[in-house]
Amino acid sequence: MDALSFEQARAVIAAQVPPISGAADLVEDVPLELAAGRTLAEDIVADRDYPPFRRSARDGFAVRSVDIAAAPTRLSVIGETRAGEPSRYRVEAGEAVEIMTGAPGPQGADCVVMVEYTCRTGDDVVIEQSLPPGKNFVAQGSESAAGATVLHAGVRLDYSQIALLASVGRCSISVFRQPRVAILSTGDEVVDIGQAPKPFQIRNSNAHSLAAQVRRRGGIPEILPIAPDRLQQTRELVEVGLQADMLLLSGGVSMGKYDLVEDVFADLGSELFFTKVLIQPGKPLVFGRAADKPFFGLPGNPISTMVTFEIFGSLALARLAGVADACLPFTEAVLAEDFRHNPSLTRFLPARLDGEYGRRRVSPVKWQGSGDLASIAKANCFLVAGADRESWDAGERIAVLPL
Ligand code: AMP
Ligand code: MG
Image (tube, rainbow, N blue to C red; front, side, top):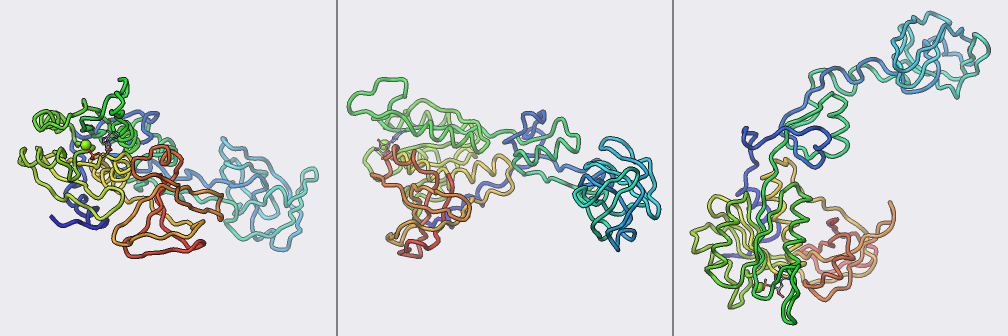
């Protein structure tokens, strides 16, 4: 099987894992308080105009624009409208109504002069500024008209969408069920983190990084017992894992004598869509479907496991979770130092983005290779070196994938 480029592998995953439908068994209702991080399964419609009335955006005086064309101008104040009460006034020529931010505009007035540009004396106010009609009013329905769709199914809910849902009066909403993701670590040397490792054993960190990644992407991780490098036991655990919506394996996909993952899936009569991707870390990488479930055989080196889930596994998970836009959040930053690589692979290297807005600088973290957890724990992004370019100078922009 030919090795795929990074882009080709993403396209294969997108083609093989169609977005889930809104079928009744795949959705559930949740109260708004528990909706953050979930994926909306219904379109949301504005229940009324937003704003529901012509709203003042400032504290000041509601006036007729024509009356203040030759400011400074003295107007007579006929009353006051506070936020939370209806407007009882009609502004005629030469008149003003004192108004608060969030209050409905009085009839007749077509703009609001900020209090900072006025001088109140008794029943009069001197307006020191001319304004065009409409200024400092937000027209009724200008944000959303009643009946308009304000959110589409497939959006992952965060605080801004939650605010919108609250404002349209949705106490509960329909969201996609969270996919269950089985996590199976393989390797004779790998032991449970609660166990004291023998000198030649290592603790199972991959199950825990993957569980955190799955949870962050809206899935429910299910960590299976560690599979030793034996065909039969691995196969049995794979069959358990395939009862979930998706299966992630770590380890056992390289060329070693005991790398059994491909054999196990061949045994199960599964389809393999790719077994190698031209990236680093993580070149051996298996993606397929067995028992109608997508699965990934991720390389066992801890940083390879993280990277390959982040850039590939997460796409399949997003599709199963109903997320419509599963693009990776690539961005660019200025390199703090020269960078060179061998350009046949797309590289994802642990790196640090530092500095505030306008001064963002990225530099690779020094590391001892894809097993170096102490290094990746210091990183906050991957520096992404494209397969089509060999070198970048300090000060040039380079692609970055925030962690
Ligand atoms: P493998 O892909 O099975 O050849 O493993 C590659 C490297 O990753 C080896 O050094 C393994 O010991 C290590 N490794 C494999 N699985 C895990 C795991 N679950 N947690 C931490 N390290 C692992
Ligand atoms: Mg192994």
